[in-house]
Length: 392
Image 1 (cartoon, one colour):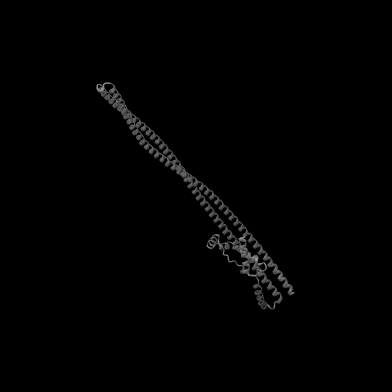
Image 2 (cartoon, one colour):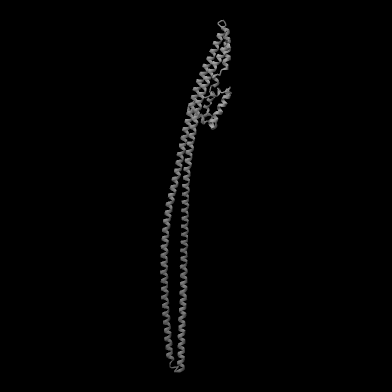
């Protein structure tokens, strides 16, 4: 009879513990599902953040290509300016050469005129000498044939006439030479004036073209500089806007994570309170059952003895039951703002452990599994499981 009652008591205790274990397992499944959902949300937010980073990098690459194109245009304009400067230098050199040629031509014309005068003088002198020789021959012939003395005066007169003619011819030759010199000087002056006028026209046209090119270059350079400044401002504004959006999104993610952690902690505290209540009820049921069993076996005469035995049995059996204090969590009920400030004051690795700390509720489901007989082993297994879930 005593063995049958003991077997019945063990069966009742097993059924109660099985019910408690099933409740704890259900609670652990609920907590794990919540942790998994929070992890999925975190992964989605990270993917969105990486997508925004990729878009920003693509935009920066496009602006960099535009900047390279602007630099190439600036280099091309600089090359054009160098070409214009080289052409200007060539034009100045040609002007200098033209002036030098003009000076040389003036000197050569003067030499030609001087040579022409000398030749004309030599020709006039040769003609005079020839005429004198001819006249002498004629006079000698006349002297040898006819009256040399009678005709001396005539010959002298003819000689004087010839001298006068020679003087007139020399005078006429000098006049012609002077007129020719004046005509040549006039032609040279006209030619020099025409060259000066053409050079002035070329210089003015060259200056006009150079001014137009310079104005065009300045306008294009100002336009390119304005475009460069606009691109730089656009890059800066877009970068600041992206950074502000990312910071805002990161802040929202942190607030949501803190809020989610706060909710899980509150849920954990509620589950812990439920588990403690269930364990307390179980302890009371076991104590009541032991008291009833002792009362039924000893009878009414041994109340004091049964009380001593009952107290001994109760203390022995109750010490074997799991105490609610063994499952008391070290978490402190905090607000999401306090949790956020705490998470900012610890390193990044500790923040991961801190954020994933609600997953330690898995120890209730792990306690019911075989091999987990101590709270330290339960804590170790639950912590390793949480770390695997976060890394996965």
